[in-house]
Image (cartoon, helix red, strand yellow):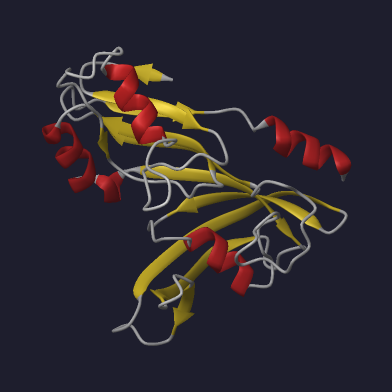
Length: 214
């Protein structure tokens, strides 16, 4: 979507890891972009730095920094970054807009859940508004006010409206092969020009197809 001497802004497809894991170190957005900035020269000192992550099955906009200073600035100002998502969830939400607020913790099986104990979990806020609903599904716009691991997926699952295609927190009703969660737009301060930058993507084709079915 955008490249300058300080940052790269890309759209990650569903199914691609942001960064490597113990099992998969090569096929990641981080690896592919490192390869891209090195222009095929393995001795090149060029590299990209991870600013934030998206779950493997979530698609959408990712920012990478091209220097340690740019990464530091973006992360230090992350709370001022505006992040909006689209999701298709099961059921019809009540109310049609609002903010989900819980403390999120993670167990030893790497499953995230809400806890009433603020000492055990981190405060997590998810603002949402229903855009469209039909045949037991809702298209929801989400304003992510905090960025915890699996936050959107857990908040909607615990509300009784899991994200369509969620194999981990869903109810097993997989009407979609992919997770219907997309990081649609991001607005942030550029690390060096200090200008406000905003990027927005179209709704993914598989979202459109899924909505077409209903």
